[in-house]
Image 1 (cartoon, helix red, strand yellow):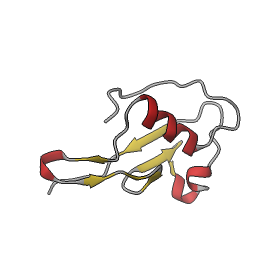
Image 2: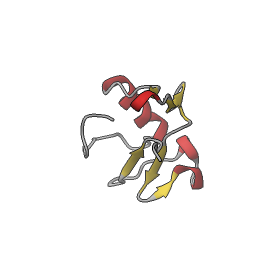
Image 3: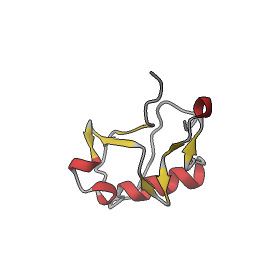
Image 4: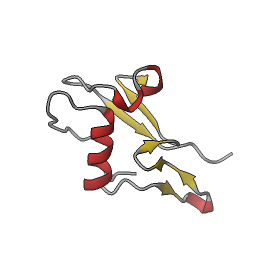
Amino acid sequence: MLGFKEHVFDMPEGTRVIDLIRLLRRDYYLADRLDPGGNNLILFEGDNPVGLLILIDGCSIKQLKGTETLLKDGAVVALFPPAAGG
C-alpha cells in the first residue's frame, strides 16, 4: 500500500495519529481508495480513515481517541486496508 513494510519516523513530541496520516498522504501518496480486482475500496474521506484499520501498539484507534490519539515515543503504528475476497 505504501511501498514499504516497516519504516521508522522521527516525529516531534505531541504528534497525533492525524498528523501521521497527513504526512503519509502527502509524502507517500496514500490514496483515498484502492481498486484491487475491480473492487472500489474507500480508505479515506478527506483525512478521516473510513476503510482503514489503524492500530497503535496493537490497539485500534477506535478504542483510544481516534485520530486525535497522541503517539508516544516508540509507538508501533500499523495500517491495514480493508480485506477483500471470498
